[in-house]
Length: 185
Image (tube, rainbow, N blue to C red; front, side, top):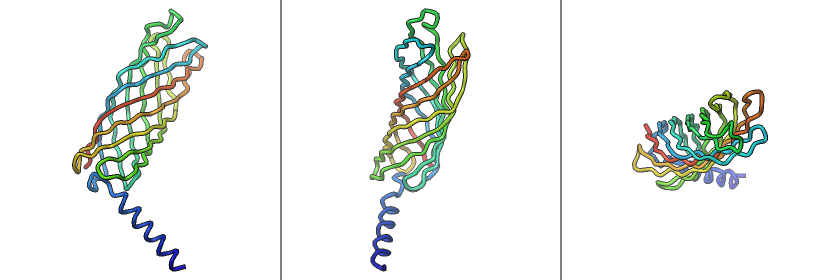
């Protein structure tokens, strides 16, 4: 019994030691992000080409050991490339406001992570209408610490949500790739 208890305590101590924040112990962070959103629409049984647009956003979070809870917002404006001329060259405003959990692998200076999120997505096709609904995202990222307070990051995510525009289902699936920085305090 004592041996099992001793092994458990050793494993727990190693877990705590290895999971020390690379940022030096600062837990709260604010960040900026910019990158690309590649969107595929499914609406009215029409064919749409995948469209890529610039995205930008902000984030704030709290990190304790190897887990972080992050609130984030991003926006991207896509152009619709459709076979149907009535929808061609319209713009889709795409926004996300949500929460994500990040699970870090603790390495010195560089922290790879898995992120799982849920949030409110909204999209509007100019001239047709707009809608908002909850959806999920899943991704991988890498955070590189440059001292105690500053970290650079790169993250790739898959986002999916179902919306209703003009009483018809609009499925939005997007891949986002963004880069940014977090400032820990």
